[in-house]
Amino acid sequence: MYLGIDLGTSEVKIALVAGDPQRVIAVGRAGLEVARPHPAWSEQDPASWIVATEAAIAELRAGHPAELAAVTGIGLSGQMHGAVLLDAGDRVLRPAILWNDTRAAAECAVLEARVPASRQLTGNLAMPGFTAPKLLWVAAHEPEIFSRVAKVLLPKDYLRLWLTGEHVSDMSDAAGTLWLDVAHRAWCDPMLAACGLDRSHMPRLVEGSAASGALRGELARTWGMTGAVCVAGGAGDNAASAIGLGATADGQGLLSLGTSGVFFVASDAYRPAPARGVHTFCHALPATWHQMAVMLSAASCVRWATQLTGAADEAQLIGGAEALSDDRRARAPVFLPYLSGERTPHADANARGVWFGLGHDTGRAELGYSVLEGVAFGLADGLAAVRDAGGVAREVSLTGGGSRSRFWARLIASVLDLPLALRAGGEVGAALGAARLGQLAADPRATVDAVCPPPPIVELAEPVAAWQPALAARLARFRALYPALRPLFRSDQESP
Image 1: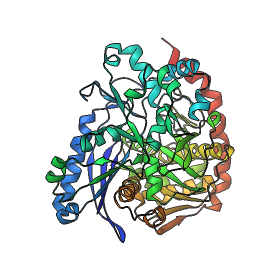
Image 2: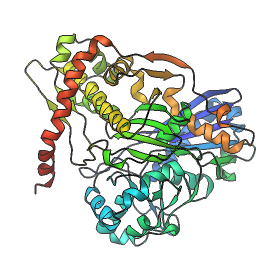
Image 3: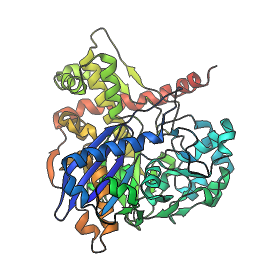
């Protein structure tokens, strides 16, 4: 048996997985809260991750004690880019600054000025969500805290510290810090020095499928596990989802509809393309990379619109959108989904959400439809950027909480003109991927081909040809709005 622990933004999800034949036995969950003490800030208390993990384990133990006792490997998946700052005694110095926190926009320019070759060294454009600019912000605004920093960990790696007592990260998650030489899979000394850090502040690096340590005996006994338990390097959440969906080889990809939206394509070579805001990161397997387009707000836009419009739940909002006639959809507002700024392709922390074209006849259904469509249009921009960068997606799986809506899946497929495979277990893709990495690390006989096949296709979301002419016209309007509004976003953010 194997465990996959997925530390997300809104919950910890743990999959209990049998290895032979591979199947998900059960899933435990526990929710998390995000604090937003100031505009553009997003923080969490790392202690809450441990509390949530213990609650999810308790749920699994209550229902499946024998299976949990048989666990021999654990893999970790986590929200990327977060900054967990520890002192010399491994005490947390401040709340973790999360991936969707955009306070460090100015520090990106500072970092690239300090290291003019940063894009060549890291393969990526400096963006405020990445970890390195966050440390520059802390140094500038919280110097007393910065002076006490002994270690900087990513969120899942703080969980690992609790699980194993080891400071370790994996290549895929470390690639999102802007401190990794992604081509050579090693820490980049010039980028660390530009932030006032060196390798002593960084965790040890391992591949995602390699062992990073062993579960502490105290935890193993508490959880009822009877033997030694290996903890794998694991992966950032998108790489872990790819492993769970079998996207391990060149051209295999996924589209994730979670809090953020991600278009991910695996690659057998390092192909950086920072100019379009495409991320080039290490994959969770040795000698493998991936290209990724990221929009900061995807399913989170639907949650926001549900609360704003007073819908009973997201299903009611989406149901109202689906029930609209073609004519009413064509007259719906156009929505820019930049509620937290945007990464690919705009790299603009100042961008904000917009409804364009409101009228007296605009109701909740039209607003809901425009949000679903706007996210689909943002993903189309991401796909175009990946294609411009040489990424070729030959098969794409759809995952994340948003994939539960078949209407939204068909809408996105129609905008992208690309069929999307809904696979068994897709809703727990990152946790399943983490468990698979745990199996690869714990079982010396395990191979990637045997452990990481694509799960069976449950349904194929095909493009709807009848929708595509109207969508193409609305996509053109969507793409005209951002460049027209960008100067206003910036002046609004820079006003006193």
